[in-house]
Image 1 (cartoon, rainbow, N blue to C red):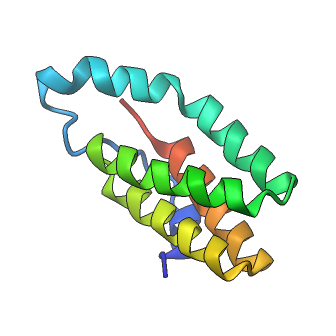
Image 2 (image 1 turned 90 degrees about the horizontal axis):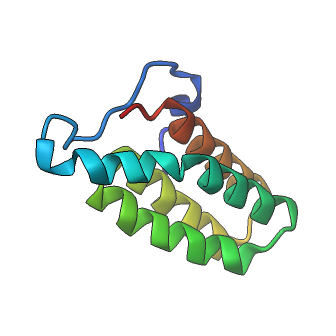
Length: 107
């Protein structure tokens, strides 16, 4: 299970590739999509679209790891597992954790 204290931390999060000039443009593109990612995951939760949340989480798990955000990848993995249990409270906590993580990403 993901560490839910992540939502309480307010420090910035940077990609493990942040100092790699070759990744600068890609990280900028990823950062530019953060508002859309937050909106999508919140909307899916609001609509109780668990199957779609599971797919979104699976895709986020892979993409965020590839962009050098292992914590976000772990949070997405927790959301994916939460969706498979269909426990509404667990799903909500996982979404809140992802949104908090996305809010802290700094490129």
